[in-house]
Image (spheres, rainbow, N blue to C red):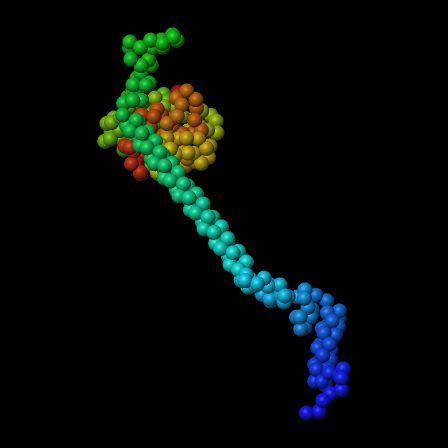
Length: 275
């Protein structure tokens, strides 16, 4: 083996150092020529991601996790937790809404049942007619005499009719086979000579409504309505002192009785009566 002159390194070592120097120069030029994010070799120090292990920064004896999946897993867990909490809140709100709706429906059913039972009882008569021994601060008013049918009334309403209405006398009654089966009772028609006058003639019951029916024309409550004439004309509960919009007002008890005993198709005769 030939000895090299003193102070001269082997040729292979010089070549290796030159190669390393050239590589470092090339990398430095690459860093200067390409902005961040556009380096095709992805070896720029600023382009390193958390998954790349930076050289020389590892602490001895301490394991460092450079994996980028851990923050993503934490974000996914947080998102799932928020979704579960949201679903729980929405579910609780739905349950409360359903329970509230059921309670409201149950209360409505109880109110309707109570009105039906009250209308079918004699409570209205007791309320309208106070006991003889009862005293009030106002002056006592003698009860009105019950209406009486005359021979002329019976003549104006044919025997085939089930319900009869005398506009002049403001009375109405029910009959079967030409015999009076209910009434006569007081009623209040529409004001005569106006657009709301109750029409006269022979009609038939078209349909009936319950205690909570609301007029679609005047948006007023008309309990126990029995519709028999065009234009929404019906028997129903209403004031006996204020004229109607064309309907026949009855007391609550009378309206309930008419609703229960007038079948669909029953004949109704309305006549003006004696002048």
